[in-house]
Image (cartoon, rainbow, N blue to C red; front, side):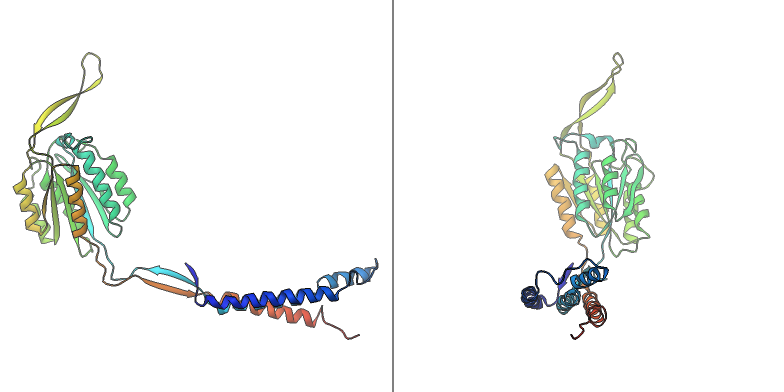
Length: 335
């Protein structure tokens, strides 16, 4: 951002412009229509010299205006973040098992709603690094912790139900997230675990993984998604006669292990939340967003670069050229 430290000094430029206008008018009144009439080489040289006789005056005007700008002190202001400002490293563990396709979060299923709301959450965390882990029967890192939110959102959007197998390896998902955070230099590290089921895959016990997270100072927020009671689940299969993929619906009942998710959060100093619909899940993510704020112990600072040397140099150069021209080419010789 460019600004003037003393903008009111620019009013002096109006006086200079007014003075220039008066001098130009007087000069025109004193000058005749033709100085001389000659087609000789000497006459052409005199005519050229006469046409540029106002150059010293023009340079003096430029010098005066540039000097006024220098006095107004133009400055370039650069906003800088204080060194006391630091973000949080967050890894989102998203359940991608088959049951996340249940359509109790209509008009979309649980997985699509979770992806959309997590994407909104990522966009709000402007000072943080975000990582994404999806899990089913196994866990996989889709995005390591990064400041590049566009990459994180893009990879999250490409995630699909069933891409990690049809199972729920909660312990493996937590361990994978810990592996991404354990070497982090951030003062605050957080795992957000989103699931609708019970740990039924993998060789790592979720509570053991949670204790390991607590050892590294990592806090875990657990979100149990899905409504209670029977919910519709679409199943796609190929018709053996036509070869076309058809969608059939079956009914499943939620098997969320709330007690285990509560213990995981409690061991690490986090919290457990229940999200039975899209609005409830949105409220939960906003609550976590408010809890885990980027710390700021001092206001943002700014650096100011003084730019007045530039117009000052222009003023001195124009003044020097004016004096040089007045004493040489356009020097007035007494009659």
